[in-house]
Image (cartoon, rainbow, N blue to C red; front, side, top):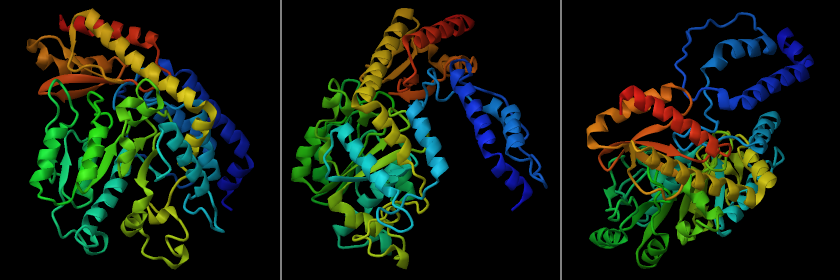
Length: 469
């Protein structure tokens, strides 16, 4: 064995202890770490001929690289719908690295760690109030969850014409209907060879809404003259957290032949709360659903899952089966995630979620979700009270979409936000909503409190003074 590797092996416990302490120091100080950072490094570092060993590498990371990092898991990072990491999820994530399993099979001599994934999906279905008619698995994020679901939808569409798109390529124009798709869904249409511009926009409801107009949806369906199609709908649009009418769409599904996909990356968690679960009423009728755990479930990045109806398992295997490798056996008899997902090598991504669900239960996550929604309302009220801002849309859930008051200040919105973010106390993202430049704050982090909102409002007032607004 290499002498430096041997030394690390002999000193393993001490190395991990030092890494643990560095992590604890970061987490204990997360409220004081900037949310924005312009620090840079020379990335042309020379590779050592002789390694430094883990302790010296850790020291270099601490001194040279750690200063680049922001508090993206902290209480005032309100951009991109980014959750934090609860203690239980960090434990699960750490142990997933320690045990280093390739979660593939539920019945194999080489390891059955996928049983943990099966159990975690079962727990998530209970959390979300969804039936066991869904089969699920973990992927890196909402983009790959959408990709997986829409990949199966593509195969379903081909089957309507007795064609196998996975084997022979796409030979028909695939009909896609949607109203306010997330950019990740559009990216997936490109990746799947469907085309990022190959979808038809359905009208949204009037009255400052982003939800699908079901009457216009049916008119668009009728124009297809009985042809099958794929519907991409939303459980929480990214700007205003608006929800499509799933009960009405369920009724349409009884009349017309289509694959129904729901992007519920963050909004799907409304199902956990008795106060807000009406927003997803009827979503169990969908063929596939996307959920992203690093958002409202507050687990570390690279943790999302797809749900696809079990009745479509054959289509899913047709789409993703791993080239009939002999060691995989019969895909239906011997379930293996390699045959139903894009990735072959799969980290045990379910473990942080399993720890979180077992540690905090349904009540714990209900509290996080309802607290986040209350904080969004509180922030919206604080903006109105300040007097220099206006809401671009009602606060329906956890997202606050706003701008500087007055059309004359529209051109100042981007620079205002840039200056605010530069101060490092809060991070929010720019957006455009109904042709107006705006700012979006998303509340999903388990650490955020009303005190954080007070800090942010104070920071915003300072920047307003600089802009003489």
